[in-house]
Length: 117
Image (tube, rainbow, N blue to C red):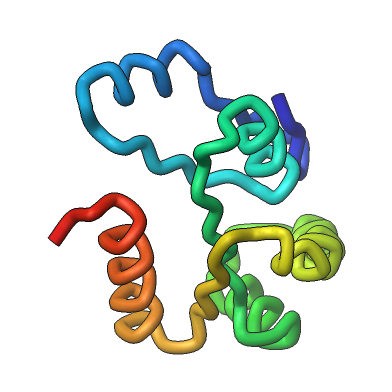
């Protein structure tokens, strides 16, 4: 389990096993620590880091959403700085600078890794 801004996050291994046993791929949305933990127990994992174009742009997006307090935004930005330093540890990096382009790139990566067309 991981705690971010007072919230508890985690994925049950049994749920991953159930999905994989059904012959499907399992896609998890994780922060960097969680992604590394999954890779440690599942070496076949393919990791994709979704990056904001910059921390300034991330801050602008967070403030525009207006769903978090200034303190929570500060926590998110500090975490983003630390996580961006880890982007090179991932198999793929997709920059979310333009939604349509980023989705297309993510689709290409997932399709290429899973053999889906």
